Length: 142
Ligand code: IDP
Ligand code: MG
Image (tube, rainbow, N blue to C red; front, side):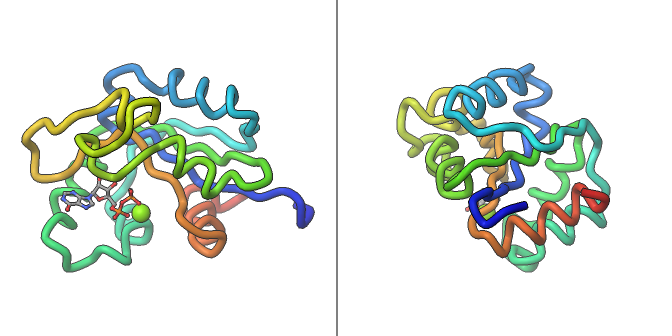
């Protein structure tokens, strides 16, 4: 990896995968101009989720979040391109899909389903440090 290439960890969460939206998410990533560096379909273990969501441990939504994230297969994706960490966060939109702007993944494709956790289709790394840490959890051999 050169200093010009930035990588981010994207997850298509179980709601997005179940609804057949993986292709739509990948389409938006590629249409934006980012490239795919790694792609896997897997059902997350609690150990992977505890590592991935360590910053949220103890919050009211933590247990429902881990339960939801382990409820079925996800697509784990490493994307690449200058600025792709903030760039994908822009594509994803606000955390709460009710608030997420139209044109974003969450704004266009999700809503409040009345569940304890926001089922908001995607995860995207929020900083270079998070991206490095998260890529290591989902792609230890990358
Ligand atoms: P992000 O995914 O936009 O970075 P985070 O604050 O890192 O949002 O939260 C991680 C995930 O936990 C969210 O994507 C969402 O699924 C869930 N979540 C966050 N805050 C809440 C909340 O207040 N209620 C329910 N679920 C939440
Ligand atoms: Mg986050």
